[in-house]
Structures are given as C-alpha cells and as structure tokens.
Amino acid sequence: MKKFIDICVSKNVTEIICGDLRGIRDNCGKGNGSRKRNKIVNNFWSHCYITDRIKTTAENNGIRLTPVDEHNTSSYCPICCVKGKRVYRGLFHCEKCGREMNADVVGTLNIARKCGAKIPSNIKLHPKSIKIREIILIQRKK
Image (cartoon, rainbow, N blue to C red; front, side):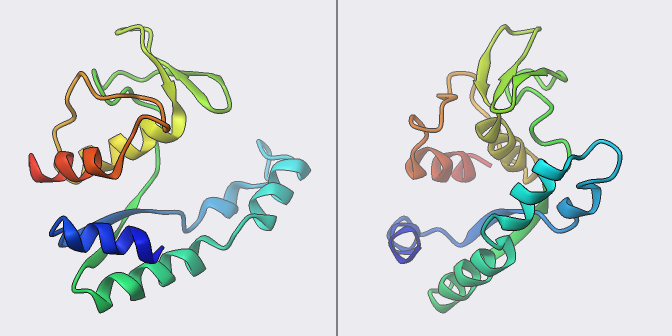
C-alpha cells in the first residue's frame, strides 16, 4: 500500500478513485445469491478496512481518495459502451466489438469513465498488462 502511494506521489497524483462496495452484501443470499457466494463475500478482506488504510496513507501525502459507485461497471464494454456478457465469472465478452477482457479490468476502466476519463481503444485489457502508469495517463487525459 505504501509503495502504491509513493508511486502516486512521484507521479504528482492528486486524487485516487476507488470503487465503493458498500451495499454489495445486501443482495447476497437473497433469491439470486447462494450460501457459497455469501460465504465468499463475508469471508473476504474487509473492503472498508483496506479503503480506510489507503485513504489515511494517501491523505497523509496530500492525495484525496474518492469512492465511486461500482454498480454495472463490469456490465458494459469500456471501448464501445455496449452491454456485454459474462462468458464466466472473470471474463467479459463484447459482442459488438468482439473483445474479450477481464471483468475486473472492465469495471476499473468504466469507473475511470464515470470520472470523466477518455478510454483509448488500444488499451490493454488484461490485469497483468495494466500498469499504474497507464491508469495515471488515463487520469491526465481528462
């Protein structure tokens, strides 16, 4: 976490955008949920704890953290903005532009879009390919 903030400081980042997961547990186990899903969500790291740690470290370095609602961010293609389909849990497929991409990357790019960033059509769409540098460049293109 500290290393991430140090990189942000060295790149003159003034704001970190973070997905806001509050309410995600509300639908677990109700109709469309399952015991397995509920167990996974409730046993996973506390998102608020991690967010608070990042926020404190960032604010100590003059960077503000802004939470953004994640609702539907992994449902739409970040390139052509058309609703896509999940091939399976972690893979998103856009029928319009034919791209398959990691669903977490789709969500991240759509959160950036919600904040006014323009998403270039040649961006790499796999989490191993995404670098902090690319996210910072997206932010600077606003």
